[in-house]
Length: 433
Image (cartoon, rainbow, N blue to C red; front, side, top):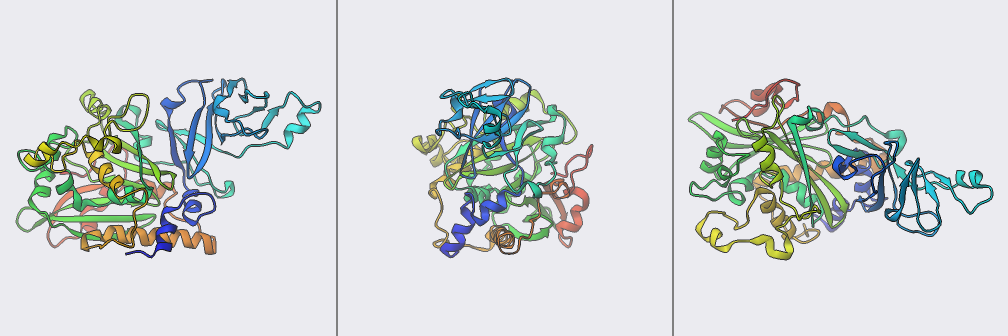
């Protein structure tokens, strides 16, 4: 159980909050490049960490992220006209550069001098991979650009999607580091393993280990910037099957791989305290994704979702009870009655309410990864607030990481047995069974 004040500290990410200030020390994905597809295209509304912003791409190709509202009368610049050098408010013609600096106020006689004193709050917006990233913190503390492997491999080897999730970021993250639910929530089918029905998971030997041992043992190892969360299950005699989930502060997780399927994972980015973006990626370190794999991802297979056309809200959502099929639940075709790994996860995470009341929970041994992550998050937020201690996890050395799925002798630790498998090394395939 958590005290209410600790729950508040971990879940509130608006300006001035301890966790909000921690998040602002990291580059966060805010848009897919497809959302600003060409120079001079229409602006896009962005809400992140409870701040309402507008993203622009000028006719010269410069990206910008600034306060959504004009400094004059508070008009939303989403209605603005993107033109040479920036965006112009349609109400009275005030114009702003991509960095939020006013560059034209037509009504003022001393236009240039007046403009010098008008600047909207703004943040850098940078393309890395197929995403646009922003850093909302102290410019003097800005870390290097992100170097996550999924964002740095060639474009034909990676795919990224996002979905709108109607709950606080933390309960979504906690689902991402909880390996004990996999056999249950994602189970089903004639062989009792629903993952075999998903083209992005099928055929891996690890599926059978998951099905054969419903009582995983967890071991947690500290790593700079986060944790390695190992879930151990019985394998062949004298051996264990280890699924190891990396978590990197504050909101990055990777799902342990299966066979030669692509690696995948998530960023859980707060929109506000009651909603978040679930950014989901798939990539393969050494080969292009096949057309079949990419089509499956676009269709909502694996960690992705099928969304309402023109939006990022899943077709199966809380308004239609996630299209639960009680007959398939009864027969066991889908253990939860909900189709798809992503929606199985989000349906239960959203069912907890916008912000789960952690004073009522009863944690058990398999929740040790969640407990350790909460502790590490709290320590990092309080150290930044109380002592100005800069957090870990925002440096390239912390980001060059992979998840691992491996069978090891029973007397060997997963850290010793996996060795360099946790390191993202160009041209080296993942360690997976």
